[in-house]
Image (cartoon, rainbow, N blue to C red; front, side):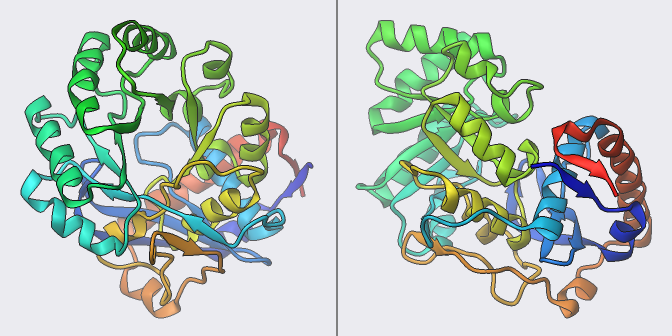
Length: 339
């Protein structure tokens, strides 16, 4: 379906830029800035990380426009299973982090953090396993290892019984090589592709290359729920729906994708609002008893004002919105016509 891209003035008039504090450092930050848009059918979130170039950020804007101006496809389920997320904290902090998620059936553990080593990763993962002996444990390296490091680390980490390892190395060819080495060594770890899906011009290349056992899909980096559904269908691989460190507004879009997928074999990485010290809604989309019930997310005016970004950061985001709108209007990405 081709949608109408709203005029820039409509987006600027509806824009709110906020800065939210994090409970723990995640992805190297203690505050998360995002731009929220109020459309005729709901709220959308535009929050590409600052280092992303405008062409890549345009997919995030497409997703926000879909949420606010078109809405989401029909849901096949209304309860979405989610995993807890453990950042690259010291092992002694693992129980504290897990306590924010309530009952937990699956945990994603960040590994390969800059400034840390494999001993830190092993301690963190073992702390998770000790706290939750029956939970499914997965690790996420965000491409932080090279091939020998990944093969060695996953050989060690597999002793705790990993569900899968997410993006152990940065390149698609490297993922395929890691899979081959693990298979040859008899190491029972599945490989999931994340950045090799959402940050590639061709998100299907990882599937064609046989470089992953499953794919991680995130709504905003892929350009919206409808496009993500199409990518999953074409890839022909099991999919895990995850977040891009969104507020509840962005998590609502992730829940819409998880709710619309024909199959949902893995718990989703959509519980990350628990990593925020504050959210932008009065009823945050956080997990209870291992899942999140599908419901709407509405930004609260008082919270928008309380967490409004400083003037220079608001100007930075609005200028970015102007540039990215121009990119999206000119490229369309197969999603939009101008209105």
